[in-house]
Image 1 (cartoon, protein in one colour):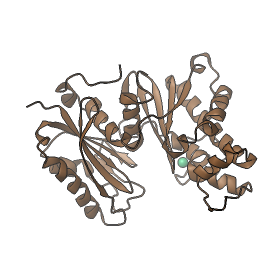
Image 2 (cartoon, helix red, strand yellow):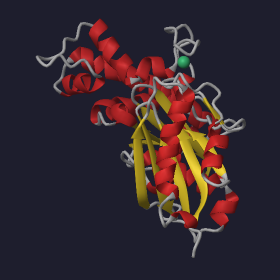
Image 3 (cartoon, protein in one colour):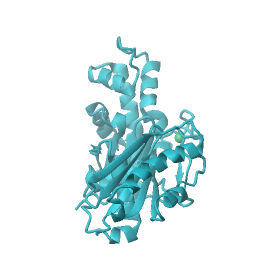
Image 4 (cartoon, helix red, strand yellow):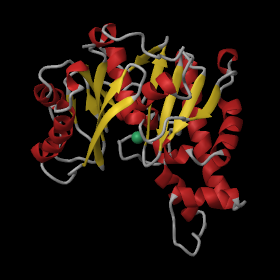
Length: 323
Ligand SMILES: [Zn+2]
């Protein structure tokens, strides 16, 4: 029997998804539970163990060589712990030890969800074939991850590339993280909606005040809605340009709900990038919408296990790693 699969866990504030994934990124088996996010830590862990139980009881389990976890952050990969903002029962929770115990001692790799999404886009999506990339999730929050020199760069704690909390406005609004003028404070979906409402934009008859509704209004030419997306695009462009200047990425991939806004976001974003990415070595930087759908977290967790756990990768027949 070939040992050619990895187990993947995608842990968020609303659902816990698990899968067995092969070396080509195909999902062979999946399991899912709602996250009991308001319960105590051990109750949340039991939901994870139920998901893992469905995987380990499968006939395919004997082929699994490692477990990759992508979790809502913050995570601390060096300590093996997670403290997801939306799961208050987990603070410094020893997730890696618990998952290892539930899976018979397999190697376990933990990364933040932004890094997992990046691994997925690099393996199978919009960053495929790019050795230096920044991938971002722009939705309720703003997260991200980096591929440098062809490898996922998770950083010591699994959070590298967390572009949502770099400041692009020195005296800007206070951010819940404690800093000021963070990209997230200017470009997340709730902040796009907030700024539009503060500017006088009124929702339609359905009362929808989401960023998606603001995007629809912008598409229809509403100047306040357009201005809110323009400001978000500037913040994203400044963050992307700073990243490119530091580490020479050549593509920025944008996913998440706001990333689905299409030209309403990407047209001003490309324009603003010309304002902020000015040095010769960043001028060819491109931006592209993410291609991986709802499975990005699972496929990315699997990719992280393959990429960051050499003993697992070594047992695999050349994965379809993007070239
Ligand atoms: Zn912040």
